[in-house]
Image 1 (cartoon, helix red, strand yellow):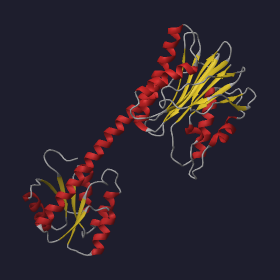
Image 2 (tube, rainbow, N blue to C red; image 1 turned 90 degrees about the vertical axis):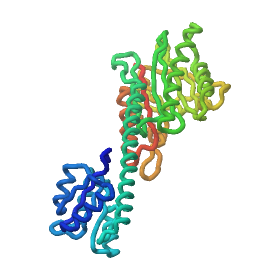
Image 3 (cartoon, helix red, strand yellow; image 1 turned 30 degrees about the vertical axis):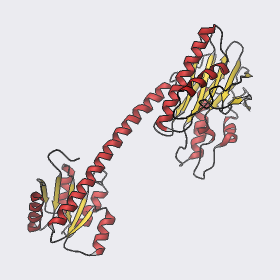
Image 4 (cartoon, helix red, strand yellow; image 1 turned 120 degrees about the horizontal axis):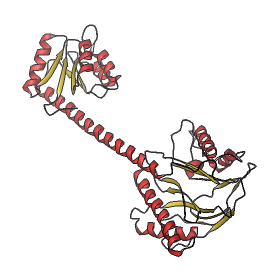
Length: 389
C-alpha cells in the first residue's frame, strides 16, 4: 500500500551502470524512495522483508534471470499483485509475450526513453493504487457482511427445549451467501401455544435479510399483541393478515415473502396453520411413514394488502414430528443441474419415526449436501423439526 511519502520502487539489474542510470532518472521524475538490487535472489530477499509498490526487473541476469524472479513473485500469495515492469535490451516480441504471460504489468526496452519510462511507471502505479483501493473496499464489505451474518444468525433461535420437554424443537439456517432471506423461528404465547415460523424472502443477500428481519419482528409483535388485545388466542390467518398489511405498507422495494405459520396447542395436539405461498411441511409418524400436511395456500406476503388468508388444521398423534423447510432444500441443485426434489426429501425422512428433531434436521442437511456434492449452494436453507412426545 502506497504511503504519504510516495511509492516505493525496487530496481533489479546486475549491471551497475544500468542500475545507477535508471535510479537517477526515476529520482529526477519525483520518485525519491528507490531501492536497488544487484540480482534476482537479492531482490526476492528484499521483497520478503519490505513492502514495495513497483518492481523494475531486468530480464537477462546471471544465476536467476528476470523470468524466474517474475514466476516466483506471481506464485507468492503476498506478492502476486505487485506490478512488475520488465526491462531488457532484448526487444523481441517473443520475450515481451513471455513476460506478459508470466504476469508482468509492462515491458521497457533499453536504452530507456525518459518520457516512456515516466508514462509506464506512472500508469503501473496508478493501476496498483486503484487495485489497493478496491481490495480495501472489498475487505471492509466482507467484514461488514460477516458482522451482518453473525447478527442474522443471532436472530434465529440458538437454544432449544431439552429432550425431556413435551414438545421438542430444533432448526438450522444456512445462508447461500454471507446473509440471506430465509428464516425459522418459534415462540410461545401466554396460554402456552407454540408458534412456529418458516419463511423465504424473494431474492438473496442484504436486502432479503433486512426484509426478513422486519417480517420476523412483525410476526412476533402481531401474535403477541393480538393475543393480549382480545384475551383470546388469535388464528394463524388473522396474524398473517396483519403481517401482510404491514409488509405491504412499507414495501417500496416490491419484495415478497412466503411464510408457513403454525400454532401448536400442546393440550389438544392440534396444529392450526396458515400458508402464505409456502410449501406444506411433512409429518413423520411414529412408525416412520411420511405424509404431507394438507390445507389452503394463499399468496405470499407483501403483494396484496387486502388478501384474506385461510386457516388449516392438522391433528398430531403422540410421537409425530413435523418437518418445515424452505425451497433451498427441495431445489438444492447438483452439478448436473438436477433438483434434490420433494421426492428425495420424503425418502430422506422415511424411517425417522421417533428420531429427535435435531436428528431429523441433520439427516436432511446431510443428504442435501451429499446430493449437491461439489456444486455451490444455490439458495438459502432453513429447516425446523418439531416432535410431539
